[in-house]
Image (tube, rainbow, N blue to C red; front, side, top):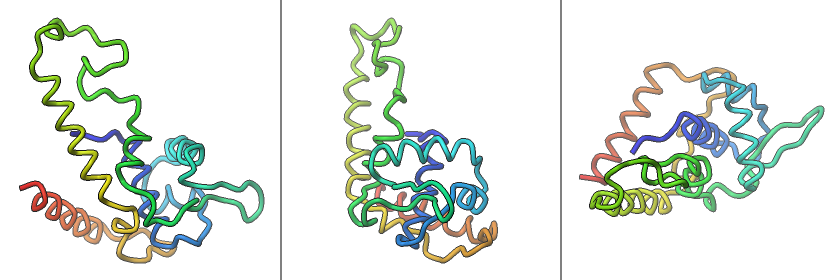
Length: 162
């Protein structure tokens, strides 16, 4: 399973915001800290606001913040929301795709089951559990910090899968 950059950016922003859930952030601030495109993040934020995961306020002192407590937001909910248009394989597309194997395919059901198990696992994981373990302040963590954080998460994922 591979998540889109769109979902990746959304998860990064939410994990950052969950560390300081009462704080109001600007999209520019999060994009800068996470070293991601502000334009792409703005599109992600718009969807998260529409879904009620974030709230936004315009004007001086405005910005974005979590709309609900981090312990009530599951990673599965966020992934479903942000990946809603992404078909795992061609035959999962809304129009059925054009795969010639579709009428006799035995793999489609297995892939659908695997996708559902993946999402069920993410449904058991809250944003609070994934909140960044440190305060970033006004500077981005070092590459070593990010690599260590990523290695810890990959290790946890590998041990839960294996």
